[in-house]
Length: 122
Picture (tube, rainbow, N blue to C red):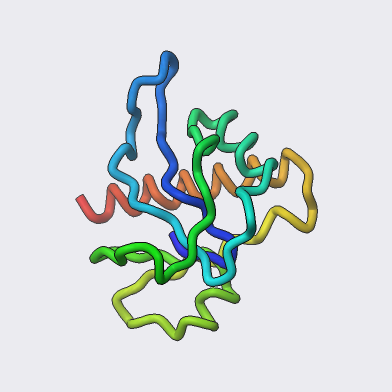
């Protein structure tokens, strides 16, 4: 996923730390990475069974871009002028609101989009 402050790779886990669905998710990167993953994002991910505790924000040019790239921030999408093959999902940034429920809503939205995409691509 690509956004201004996108996080490193998420490690989806089932209870007990076992890899869950989506274990093949690639790295995240941002156009302007923050010094650390926002604590609200780490907490929301944990509530959803994803471990972002060791993730570090990275610049887009620091990761290898694979065959599938999804931008999730309108600003990143506009700044990058991405190729037509890239997907864009407009996802609101939860940081300005800051509430746990807002971070949880973004996680749920992304999970739904990823699951739908997986069904369509299969």
